[in-house]
Image (cartoon, rainbow, N blue to C red; front, side, top):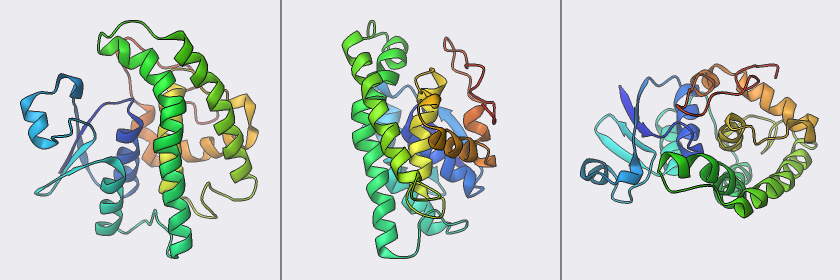
Length: 221
């Protein structure tokens, strides 16, 4: 059985969890307090970050390379399209959410509200929270523009781009930081993706000290 060293609300860990579940790969979840930088964990990943996936006799680190490795070894059901142009668009959007969205939104909302408390690093910085709350509006509008032209974020089929975006938004949805009323088309997309069996584990997460909002696991909001 695969083993994933993770943090439940980490969007990077959630992305890997979604891919594993979509591919029906059984996986044991091991919660890792990576900020404590234990020698055992640093041996698994000297970068000191999650996720880390133990798959067969391999230790894999960094969420996107992990997901693409899984895609190559377990190609069904596919999460990357066949054409080079279509794969480029998927990778572009994966990078958009893991880099731009993460730095402008996730780190300013999730990390300030949750990680600081869990890691005992003090109180949220209100200026960062305000910046994140402002930036997410732009990103939701960009997603609206994409979905107005396509069935899914990167094209006409669901891909790793959708799971990446959903991983970030689900983490923020858990702490009530997504205004689903801003875009009906994004809300419909998220309802569709969180109704997939692969999402069940994500929706079952319970974080001590941070209770689920009532709508979080509701497939119809």
